[in-house]
Length: 109
Figure 1: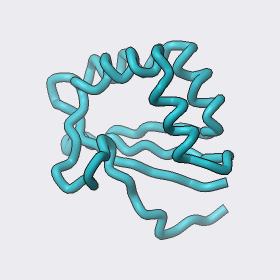
Figure 2: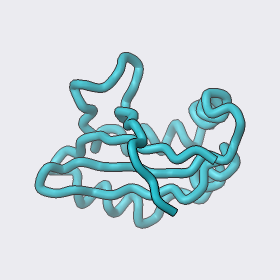
Figure 3: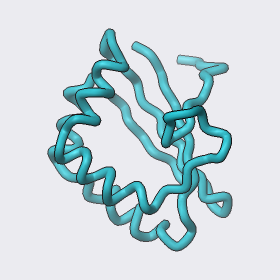
Figure 4: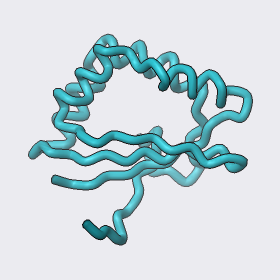
C-alpha cells in the first residue's frame, strides 16, 4: 500500500458548489475510484487560502495503469468536466499535472 497526497487551489466563488458536488459524488465515480485500487480517499479544504488537499491509499501494483483506466472512464470524465472549473491548479505543479503531487515525508501508524 502506498499513501499519496496532492494539492490544488479552489476558486473562492466555487467553494459552495464544490462542497455540494462532493456531498453527493456520483456512484459510478466512486465505483471507478475503488476499481482503480484507491482506498481511504479524503479531500480536505483549507480556507482562506482555498487549498484542497487530497489523500488516499493506493493498494494496486501499477498506479499509472490504474490512473489511465480512471481517465478513460466516460462518467469520470464527465465528473472532471464539472469539478475542474472549480479548481485552480498551482503554478508550481509539474508538467502534465492538474493536482500537484506531494512528497510523503512522515507517517505514524
